[in-house]
Length: 191
Image (cartoon, rainbow, N blue to C red; front, side, top):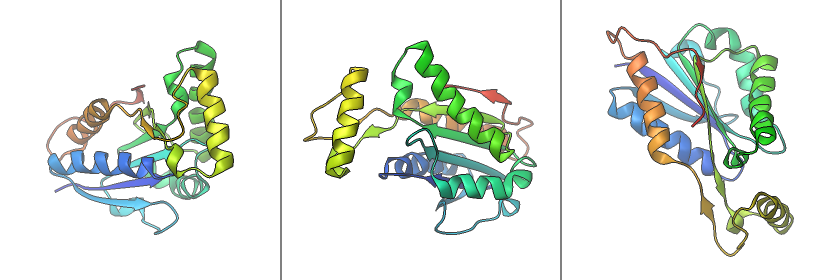
């Protein structure tokens, strides 16, 4: 059984759900999976056959614990199959400038950390108005209004394409299973 780490960083909890969904898919494909929130434990990539990192974007950056962990373990990560999942609401905007900005956030992070994941993807997260404080709710509502998104702050909105996320995790799982003869393809896949 392949041992896989799913490490995540979240701001309001939605990326934790994304990490758990990925872990569930990897388990269905025979993996033994540990799900760890960055900063709460200090897992070693060397103890795993493969690693998936999921992190949400806030103000153009990923959570500090994820950035620190990846930077500290980049060499070990580069020596095994890895995947990075960037969780970002801006992916919903189809304007080329916004898409380039989303890609640039990921590229800056990976370059600064020295990590070269085999595969990457960007998935839409959620607007969790009911969990935000007053200021965050107001800021997120303004951003959503400008982008043509949902602005009723009395409820939450989930934009993650769960089927596409499962397909991404299945492809990764198939590439890391012993005897599969495959390995995760290098490159970027935008979900």
